[in-house]
Structures are given as C-alpha cells and as structure tokens.
Image (cartoon, rainbow, N blue to C red; front, top):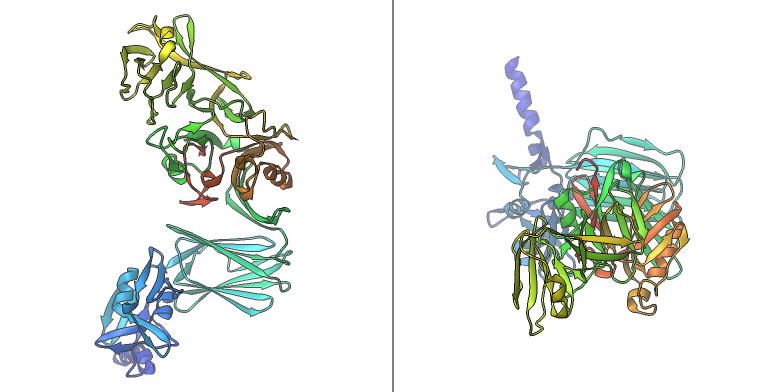
Length: 564
C-alpha cells in the first residue's frame, strides 16, 4: 500500500511537467509553476524568458521608454538602464537570458532536472488606509502594479511578488463616500489583487512614492478633475499629513502640510545646523535622520556664497546669527512655548561689570566692528583691512589668549572675539585669565527664550493678517516677494496645534490665502525660506518622505519626541 502511495505522489509531482509539454521549459517560483503568455525557449544553450512577464513575477518592472537600444528596469533594490545587447526580440516580444535577469535582480536560481526554480524575497503589503474618497496602500519595498478597469464602477489593481500582512482586513465596507467596498485577495504566483467597487463611475487619479524600504500607491476618485482634491494620512497617533490640490485663482497648486495636535504633550521643536557647522549646507533629510526627528522643515534664509544663515538663530541659549532688521522670528522658550514676533537682538560681551556691544556673530568681518565666532562656525572670518585685528579667545567663559595679528585662527571648542579698526579700544581692558561671557537680550524681552529661527515675513498674528513688508525690510516689488515659487511656513492654530506647510507655487500674499482655507483657524503664522530651500520631511515608519524641492539648507527646524 505504501508503494502505491509513493507512486501516486510521484505522478502528481510530475503532472505539471507532463502537462507543460516535452519541449517546454518549466519555471517555478515558490514551487509553483509559472504560466506565460509568451513561453521561454532555448537559444545557444541559454534559457530565454520574456523580460516583461518574467521580471514582473520577480518584483521588477521594465520600461522600453524612448531610449534607443536600452531598457529601463527597476526592482526593489535598484534601477538601471539595460543595454540592448542583453535583449533578443522574437515575434515582437523582447527576451533576456534567464541567468542574466536573475543575477541582475538578485534572485537565486536552481536547476532540478529540466526544471528551473527561482527564489526571491516577496514584498509585504503592510497597511491600507481608506477614507470616503480614496485609498492608500503601503508596502515595505517597490513592486510592480498593474491597474485595470473591469467596469466603469469597478477598479482593480494587481501587485506582483506580493504577500499580505496577516492583520490586513480582506474586505472593507464603507457606509458613505465614492467607495462602496474594497476586497483584497491573494492569487496564484504571488499576485495580490485589490478590487475597489465604486458607488458610481468617477475619474481616478493615482500617485506613488518610492524610497528605500518603502513604497506607497494612492488612488483618488474625484467627481470632476477640476474640483479640490485632498489626501489625508494618519502617519502616527499624533501627526496627520494633508495634501491638497486646488485652483486658488492663480492656477492649480499643490499644498502639503502636517498637522500635529497638542504637539507640546509629545514633541519639542529644536533648530539644528549641518553636522559640519555654521557655513555649511545640508539636506533637511540628513539633519532629521541624524537627530531621529519625526518631522522637519527648513528655516532661515542664508547667504548662498558662504552658506551662513541670515536672520536670528539661537540654539540652546547660544546666538549663532543675529536678526536682519526686525524680520519675523519664531522663539521657543524653556518650556517649549512658541512666540511669533519681530525682535531686535542686542549682543554683548559681559566683562567684569561692563557690557561690550558686539556687532554680529558668525559672519565675515567689516571694518571698525567687533564680531564673535562660535565653535560651530566654519565660514569665512576676515577681509584684509591692512591693519591688525585684536583677537580674544574664550574657553569655558574665561579669556585664554589675546593677540594682535592680521591672521585669525580658531582652536577647536573656543569662542573668538575679533575687533577691527577703531573698535580695538573697547577690548583694551580685557586680560588673559579674566572671566567673560557672550550674552544677549531681545526686544521685545523674553528671558525664557532659548531657541529661535528667523526668515519672515510674519503672516498672521493673533488671528489677524500681519503682513508688513516694509517693517521687515522686504522690497515690496522684488522677486523675493512677488514671484510665485516653492514656499514654506510654520503656523499654530487656536487649539494649540502645530502646522508645517509647503506649497509649490505661491508668493507671500498667496500664503495668507492658503492659510485662510485650512480647516483649522490659524492663530500665528510665519514664512520660512523658499525657492530651492523649501523643504519638509516626515518620518513614515523608517523612511523619511520629502516634500517640495528639498534643496540643501543652512538651518532646519526639527520635531523631536519629548524623551529624546
């Protein structure tokens, strides 16, 4: 009896191969026989597979595009242009050697008799977010997706090389909105099918986002293409991401903003600079990743020639840059409270009972002034004036050296006080060994402020439009003011919620129009640097998603968990 069972088992094992045909080349994925519309064949001793069909099973996509002699192939760990000599046309279909495509994608290949067995790590469908107008699917890696419209009110997506996380509901029913229900099903050969049943036919709009270890697909079902469209995502229990596409009267624009309700209960805001120091630029994502931030937005203007921040910058009680005129600033006090104001900064060296006025901090020297350079400054210091500078070095609040020289050098971890021209006389009473510290006051005064960033202008104050370009030394008809470009801003609402916002096509006046359309009543708002510097990042799982241009910046404003 046992012998009969063994014979039957062998027959069933061989049955797919028998059905496949003696001349065919059986290919298996996870011990499942792959079915092809265009079957593999042998050429010069190699197995040739249809590149589009086969790559899809392995989680890769192929785009013929318009590149002569090359094909663009993308898989979870990379993207490359495949030279045309790797491909062989047959009956209008491009084929590639099985060993070449497997090696490129990083799969494994084993031969057992006449059969070939391929193994590749599947991609996991981790979460599905659904609201009345759309659906967002998130995966732990890139994978091919094929959309199909079966009927006018039935939309189907097929994802290849995909598994479904156990916690995902296989059927989701909605009581209202454009979507009636969603059904998720696992088909053969690692294909996951998502069926979206609509209540009535409507246009569909899709978008995707890919990064290392993350891939998302979003579908929006809109009644009209010209209507306002909004995507809302709950990123974690405290942060919600909104994307709005709307015609505000000067064209259709895209607004991305983060809303963090009761943010001070869970987070703290901190200004940061590039790892190498003041005078260097860095991407916002690099800054956020270095500190483990959950979100970040760009802050100060900066000098494009030197990389030095322009405007007030205070970090942990140390002034790293002074304000430009009375431009708007965001102050963060010891308790994490925010102040939107237009301060004047008074910087000084406290020596004995005297306050010696300092003209600036961390910028190139001008004649007849005193400038302080902090340990984090790596930008240019001096310009030749044909005379000696008085250079005082401070370490831990004590004068450790005094010299007169045309050459200015700084030791690591020290402050430099440098006087030029007639300003030397203000430092003549300072002696080696004296106690001396850098201090500052703000007008309006707030002794509890320990951190601050600045850009401007102030847009809304106490719920009222506060835009005053001349007060903040902006030229009203300059391109900086009037040009529509990428912009960033920070705001708070009446309920204590924090808003980071970027927009792709706006000027300062447009920002106020946009703020007035938000569902939350804005209490205070200030513009940040725009153009190429406009950037906002958001930690989604383990991946930083970036919005707006994402250029390199001098200062970032990051949101950290309170326990960090």
